[in-house]
Image (tube, rainbow, N blue to C red; front, side):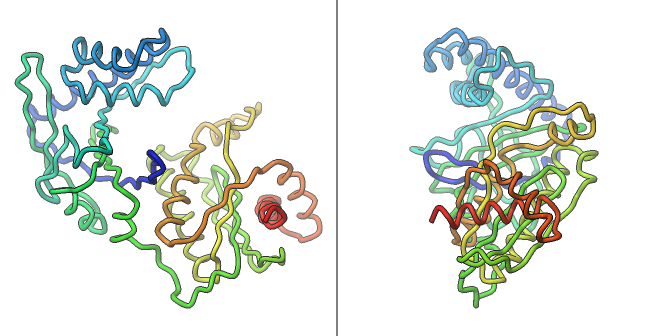
Length: 338
């Protein structure tokens, strides 16, 4: 997954915190619950049109006893926009990295398997508590560069079924350096690949620059509607990566996807509603941006208006499914606009 801040795309790596000490666990969980409450409080203050600096000061003095955590909670609260209120159920913790700083004020990596997290106290005597952390072996070279970084990074901690996970947002250049997308060196990029993105499938077409349909590839995963959010995201990301790598190894130099905005109107079908509710609108595009950056190819987002209608018409002629034809229609729309 990736995030973009100040025109810089951020890639996210995930690790698992291993907490054996019950006292350390209690301290972290208490902080995460306070942070969750701080996000709700900050959102409420924003609805009252208070200045951001004022909100940070209030959150610092009343809830978190740490101005940087308070700032991070305020940034998290912004994600909920114009919602009338926010009620968060799970504890959470974020520490935003600032562009004018190196590393992270509240989270420090001392090795690839140990991290220090700052626990603030009302008396001002804050402490760094050490936790063991385990990242996938592919991420270890990236984690090594977090030990004495010359760049800022943001972190988050989440808990799921009593398991704690840490997320680190790193610059895309660092991600590309250690985790390049597998591509064929003979790739001359003369084709484009367009994607129709859905909660339970991804349909991809490869098209030449004149609009001739070259190839169709689909990945189906209907089972994700019964998965947890984390597991569903993992399945979708792997499916998208598989298709992108296939495209890049078959002379594709441009990726095309639709601009995703709000979810479609909910239907009366409960299964459909479950699919929509589990489909993160930004999930695919964030990952697609990361893959495009890692492979040094261009990603273009196209207005999807009428592509579904055109896709239905094309399906009758091509003998393909509607979603594949919608992807093809998106490619044609891109070609006609360039």
